[in-house]
Structures are given as structure tokens and as C-alpha cells.
Image (cartoon, rainbow, N blue to C red):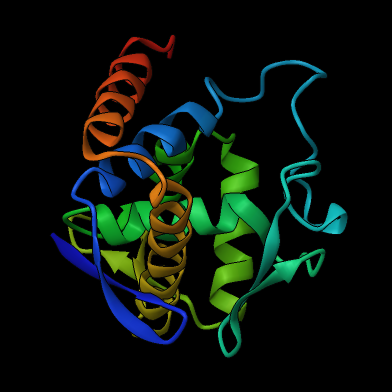
Length: 181
């Protein structure tokens, strides 16, 4: 079992929590890029992904309360993709990883760079390209976000029996794996 903070004290976390969180994130991920008019607004002037409960994202204060939209869900998805990547990504790679078009990815990179969450660096194999690397501040923000998600999921699952948690994790992972991409 891993640990999480729960009302100021460290508690044991069921092992299925990460599998459930990952499956839910997969199900929430947009499929394809730039698909039609039903896609939620993701333009920066709209404050992130409309209708998703996006949260404030900044370099200093971290992840805020709902309604304080400054970056939103797409920015956090981008930071998580960069943290998970084995090496810095190009803007096109970022776009593919988070399911947005290249112009949107460029705007997200700019927002994150302005907040000190990512840094641009020259691609050593092609000087015409730029790679995006997450900074220590960006990594810390992702770590705080993940801890909050784990804590919330652990709290929500606290009334489940171990068998129910196992079943939920198994079924959500199965659904996420089968979800059309």
C-alpha cells in the first residue's frame, strides 16, 4: 500500500487507487484532435477547458479551487505528459500526447513557460526544432495534483470493500483499454 495525506495525517492508500485514477483520466482524455464543434472551448481567453471544472494553475500557488481558471485541465494534462515522458517533447509531440491541435499545444506551452512550469530547449538533433522540458516547479505542481487526486479517490473509496475496489479497478481499466481512440 502507498500513503496519502488525509485530514493532516498520513494514511494507507488502497493499491487500486492509482489504477482507478489512471483509467478515469484515460476516459476523460479527448479522442482525436480538433474534432468538430462539440469540442469544449480550450482557448486561453476562455480560461481553459470550458465545462470541465478546470482549476487554477500557476507556478507559485499550485492547483487552486474550482472556478479560478487559469490554465485548466489541458495545461495539467500537458505537464503530466511531460513528466511521464522519458525525454523532452516537441510541441507536436505534446499535441499528440494530450489530444489537442498544434496551435493549442503552442499556446499551452507558452502559458506554462510564462509561469515557469516548462522550459524550451534546442533539439540537439535538429536545431530548427524546440523541445519542451518540465521544470522543477512544473514537476512539483504535478506531484501536488497527483497527491490531491489520490487523496480524493482514497476518500471516495473508503466505504468500498477490498473486493469492490478490486472489481472497480479491474472494470475501469478494461473499459479504458477498450475505449475508442
